[in-house]
Length: 500
Image 1: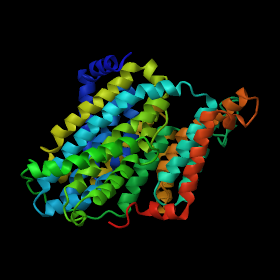
Image 2: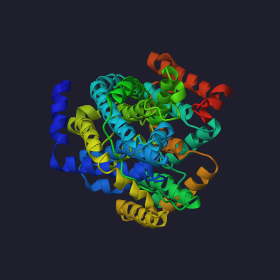
Image 3: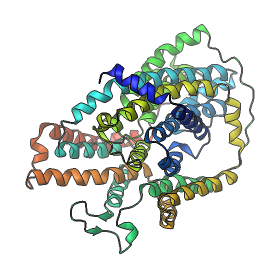
């Protein structure tokens, strides 16, 4: 099936009334959680996973994907208007975006963010459509040894790109791997780490862990530091860009789109990394670097384009290799599994309508976002006035009901509470839960490919070094680990750009 035929199938799938409706719901919800600090797309997707079980696979994935890239739009709105980034990738946008607001140029800043994001999202979607099938075909040539090395590279790269302590990121990966081994041995059926609990024989529930770690833990952290929010919303005028504005943003949008398209496929927070790198690049290539930090429109155009392009291309390793590029992609793997679909290179062949419908829906979702965001700016900012004391009980109740409905078993609710408390203490200790989730998702794959490769090679461990592709991947993993532990690199990871 050619690309044009595939896109035709995707268009037919994405334009059904149900898929259009849930695409709209996803991007609107994503914008809302991007606006509201402390909730975020990860927690939202984690808490919505249970209700997607009753939807068609393509419909549920379209909605969940919309939440992810919709949050990139929403985070920039409050970053520009009130200097309060709703999403981590929008922190860079706030530097110059809010300065433009203070100078009475909130309209051009918001228009730049929306148009740059739409262009970058479109290019990212085209890149996904062009490269998904070839990469998937190449992945079919991989054997167990290559897949094992690829998973190792993904885990190590996520450590290298995580912020904070390398040792803590490594510890979270290992803890995730250990939690992933709970249950019965994949070959012998022997119970492992079940402590005599029958509910653990099938392993830890992915949804319960995700909701607890990202939903409940974040709520507990936000309650600890909650302060009363007061927001004054003024009418935003002059959304049209001048000819000078268009001239100044054209090159930054193109550069940011290119950077985001490439960096989005990297393991870790690719969209966050892309926005920071784009800002640094724009400042260095600018003829007027002194304007940055004082309301330079290039400081909005570049990062916004970069993080939205990265949000689209982060789906490449998910759809082609079955590997998550970040914690949100790990949650989407959970959505695949809930729907009875095994993620990997065979998905494009076995479920073409699902894959291409999802790809086409991303462009439709980006169009929805442009139409939604600018007219509803006042509504999004007014949402910040909702007291958190009203929001959090509703969120917890919704998440608990959803997890209970998975198997009509109160054990899943207890698991949510346990992982919520565990996640809260890990956050207090300065540990990121995202590497833990990646370890939990990739751990069973790592074990399966390791054992399968050793069975085929009759126990010869050199099989990972004698196969060229496997060897290259392991060398890249070793290089990534070396970069992560070098003192100079470790210092830079704490602050992505120190001279700003």
